[in-house]
Amino acid sequence: MSEPIRVVVTGAAGQIAYSLLYMIAKGDVFGPNQPLILHLLDIPLMMGVLEGVVMELADCAIPLLRGVVPTDDPAVAFKDVSAAFLVGSMPRKQGMERKDLLSANVRIFKVQGEALDKHAKKDVRVLVVGNPANTNALICSKYAPSIPSENFTAMTRLDQNRAQAQIAARLGLPVGNVSNVIIWGNHSSTQYPDASHAVVQTDGKQLKASDAIKDDNWLRSVFVETVQKRGATVIAARQMSSAMSAAKAAADHMRDWFNGTAPGQFVSMGVVSDGSYGTPKDVVFSFPVSIKNGKWEIVQGLTIDDFSRKMLDATGKELEEEKTDAVGII
Ligand code: NAX
Image (cartoon, rainbow, N blue to C red; front, top):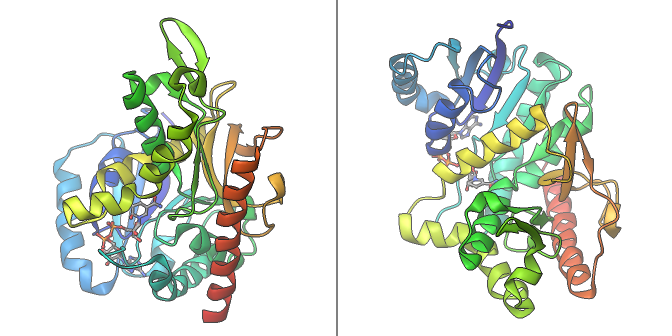
């Protein structure tokens, strides 16, 4: 068995972390042979609650978990970490727009970028979950200049998982039979869930999802809107934002980043845009990526029709506006 790696989860006393910590500790992300030490960061007010989480982790008696470091100090939290799940921030409440969240949260990600720069391993892989995730990831990367910008990503995997589940439900297939659904752009209501390159396995054959569904109108309206609004729909029902599914998506994202994607399959991640597909450069934009040897690459050469072009442009414009607003706040 290898040496333990250090993994930090911020917002560790919150509801997403409550599901995520168990998944990480038992090997769902870094595998059954990789021991780890969990660093748990939260704000001073939450240290009592965090103590309870630490007790529960101990009571889980997980052999892979070799240590737990609860702290309210980013310098301690980010020391020598190989992976960072940046979950901690102010969650969206019912009726709250993403822009309201921006000013509260970009400052947190500036501080955490600086702490990562000083204390983390230089090859640390960073996943930003806390909203507005794309712009927070961009800010974090800007304040960590000694770490490559490709090591900063934002989570759109929950949107991808939601989209996959909608396609599977529509076709009455297990969700594992659906792949290559894409989330383009921002993790917000302008995101573009795109099933035009998705494939499904049905009756032992592989088909394009659109050929199996045979209803382009549904794919461009109900499907897109359902995925875009799923977060708000969960909040309306649960009176709290998605947590179990968000934790599962964060685990999926980091597992694929460390382990790679299967040949021919891609997943969606918010990454610093190089302008691929005519998107704005230097914003964190969600693209389809394939992953090999711990490195992601944007999948190239996919056809973008007129409908997709409009959707990509709209979400790209929102990301440019968010970036301008964020830079103004800092
Ligand atoms: P909670 O309010 O349950 O937990 C957040 C935790 O972060 C709290 O314990 C809080 O004290 C802590 N925190 C606040 N500022 C901090 C700081 N500076 N350093 C460390 N910890 C800090 O929220 P939860 O439901 O866990 O959601 C966390 C974030 O995930 C929110 O921003 C939420 O909007 C976002 N989400 C992102 C999703 C995505 O797909 N990218 C989906 C789910 C979720 O909505």
